[in-house]
Image (cartoon, rainbow, N blue to C red; front, top):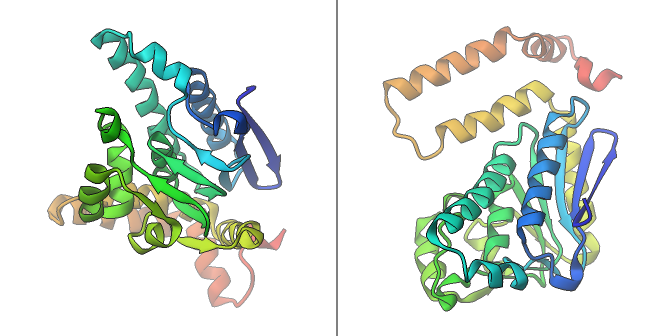
Length: 260
């Protein structure tokens, strides 16, 4: 995968975009590589968390110019196939069975906003800028919208989808698009802090909690949803890790996943 690097260190997988010369912008090849990388990392039993990072001054600047030039000549059927691949990449990130952290070291534009929003958590440097620039090109952020709207909320999306304004990291934090904003020298420490929390918890419970958020978010609170949550807690209580976690708490000892 020439467009990115995957490294494994203990329970953590790191997927790093490695094309700073094009501001880590998307192409169809990059989309395929990211999809494959998250599929691989999510399928590894030893992996407990995944960090998405990038090299250079930009985290991701959206679509690669050469890719955009090709897309300009596409017929509708070709555009449908192309957009479906981007949508599949975002789905794979969002539904990755392992928790994911976006380590945002620089600017995020257009489709790159989808990458950040599809991750479970996002930590950004205080100098990062954010922009949903599509309307300036006569386009809309359609494929990334399910994830970006969930991350920033509909009210903020109304503004930033429509105006294509650039906003800073403080505003990204205020609207909930990123969880933490830190100086560049503190970025890795904050990511490490989140990783420690994630890898200290029950792997099965973390996986089930992620699924719970995906299943419950934006749904009406009705009998079907309540029944699903009842099933969920009953299943996790009866699981090996659920029993072990409760017993460890009652016996004032470390659970098995921390004892090693």
